[in-house]
Image 1 (cartoon, rainbow, N blue to C red):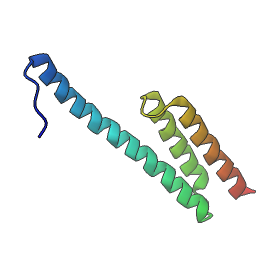
Image 2 (cartoon, rainbow, N blue to C red):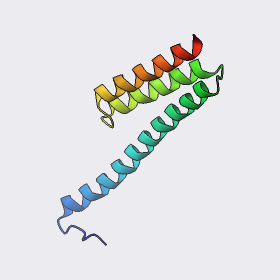
Image 3 (cartoon, rainbow, N blue to C red):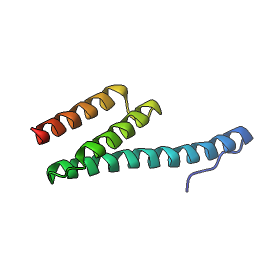
Amino acid sequence: MNPLPIIKSAIERAKTNVKANERNSAQLSSMRTAVKKFEKAVTNHDEKAADLFKVASSAVDRAASKGLIKANKASRDKSRMAARLAKANA
């Protein structure tokens, strides 16, 4: 078990950190899920791939704006997804 802080402000900060960690983990997980759904749709030649691309792209942008992933990673991921979608539609 981790030793708990004694100072009141540190106790409050520890609680805040737990909440933020849960929120960030959920956001990151939903982003990854959206990307995986898109990848699966492209692999299965599903016609919903374009809609799923929009959802996944939005999720990646949201994660980048919240600081969960870096801007370059967001750009790279979106670029790769767009390339896969274009290749699937060709």
